[in-house]
Image (cartoon, rainbow, N blue to C red):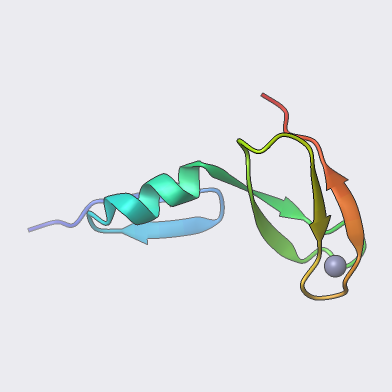
Length: 65
Ligand SMILES: [Zn+2]
């Protein structure tokens, strides 16, 4: 029996983990403008100040809908 898989952003989700899938679609993957690290940020929180966990660079995330 085949297991469905979903490609969401850069994440491959395999199976029926609905909570995980919903969590992923409510977020978007952005890149740190300093070091290019991939960050997952919620898209429903309006403008955010995002701190890169890798290089600690802080920048604004403006969701585009
Ligand atoms: Zn960074």
